[in-house]
Amino acid sequence: MPSQQVFDSKDGAVYTTSNGAPVARPYASQKIGVTGPLLLQDFHHIDLLAHFDRERIPERVVHAKGAGAHGYFETTHDISDLSCAALFAKVGTKARTTIRFSTVGGESGSADTARDPRGFAIKIRTEEGNLDWVFNNTPVFFIRDPAKFPHFIHTQKRDPQTHLKDADMFWDYLSQNPESIHQVMILFSDRGTPDGYHQQHGYSGHTLKFVNKDGDWHYVQIHLRVEGGFKTLDNDTAGKLSGENPDYGIQKLFEAIESKNYPTWNVYVQTMTPQQAESFRYNVLDLTKVWPHKDFPLRPVGKIVLDENPQNYFAEIEQAAFSPSHLVPGVEPSADPVLQSRLFSYPDTHRHRLGTNYQQLPVNAPVAPVANFQRDGAMAFVSQGNRPNYQSTISPLTYRPKPYDDKEAKHELWVGNARSELSEINELDFEQPRALWSKVFSDTDREHLVYNISVHLRNAKSAEIKARQLSVFAAVDQDLSDRIAKAIGAPTVKPLQAAPASQSVRLKVNQTQA
Ligand code: HEM
Image (tube, rainbow, N blue to C red; front, side, top):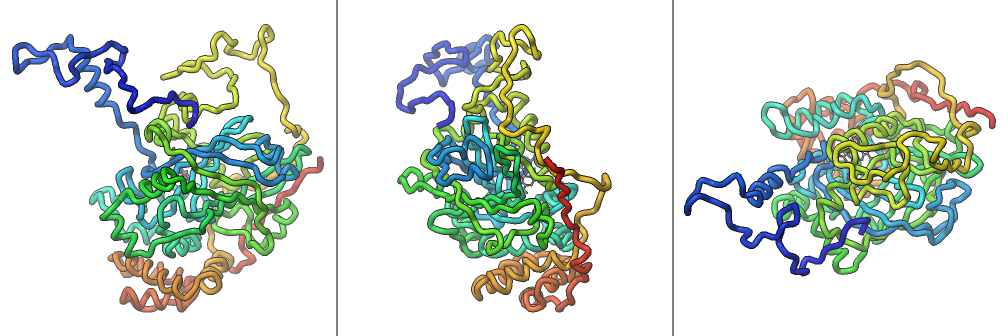
């Protein structure tokens, strides 16, 4: 368990008020006479109610329903040529780790088996600070321009008037933003309904950068492959479970750990040099694309094992604050605009959801010592004693240089306009979804995909929206579109017209010389 006071549920502790004073009669309130009115002097009663009134904190604006556990990350292979992070410096290094899994769109009471991507958020407590990998169980995402994120999310949540989920809103957005098609096809395959949280893969989705001690860097994609394979539910079983056991995912994860069937993931990276990135068929910073494994094979790094259930869900999972910007030397963000946007958004929401000093909460506090000039604020309980609160020459902090010199770092040099449109659709956007349909999926997968889409898309009332989404599917494959059209009783449509592949955004890394 992370740095958290350990309690024993059977320790026979004496019941007290919040200031620690013993109370003899927990069910009694002080009244005049037998029936009241109540007395203001009854601190025990006021303490009880006032705290109860404040029990809820805001739920996460997305990924509100979740489950989590603790365990460890272990480095199993030497990747010091890729990254100088202390975590990877020695094979056998272990770090305490917490993972929170989640669905995305539903509220904190919603069903675990809903068709939705699954969040896969990991906090690795390294000796150089916390490294958070805030991943999903899909290798791609719906957008490549972060300006669309709140719009997209609103359409997957409730209608402002009816307060209902709305299939028109859902498909209206997706059909107008066809760069989502790759993720839509994964979402509507059976991978959109995983069998619990503990039997699925995880993916960085984003391209990150690993930097070694010489300042040389690679683009990387991180993959977590679950031992035992990715298990899924079919649409009807997932739907049935949503009613019968909305907490299926929480329960299966908890039970697996209690019965010592510890969920385990092998961690791999795909790597790409900046030079390879410039000649890569796709923009390496485009989150809607994967890197073909035959060109960029998986290289083993380590493993993650979950072997400990939380003692207290709220303190250890709900209060956990994961951010893609919680990085350590040797692991850096790429310029992927969606990732860059996330670097801001998570700590911002943590300050709102948990408060300014969210990093001091036991589950978030790094095991690495923290020393800086941040002071005070609501609920500050680690105040750094009498250390100076400014950069002092009288009692200075010490500064450890990075293994690689930032000034000399062989970073990218970006030139161009301040504003640009990333979402224009071109032929390249359909290549990978087409391969998924025709090469990766089996006949059963294809049948399920058509069925899973049709039971959702048929709920859209607007014929125009249905036709527009069918034209997106037709751009992937005419047969896919025609089969869905037949299943929902809609006319067949022609593919939407996309710009030629030559008009796709190309990456120019423009490395400076060291
Ligand atoms: C949760 C924003 C895209 C994975 C969240 C939260 C916000 C957010 C505000 C709530 C965090 C909290 O309350 O602690 C965004 C924005 C995005 C974006 C602005 C794009 C512009 C993504 C992508 C992924 C992802 C692409 C995965 C590759 C997650 C996960 C969580 C989460 C796993 C749950 C973290 C937890 O369990 O505490 N996101 N998100 N998000 N997001 Fe995103």
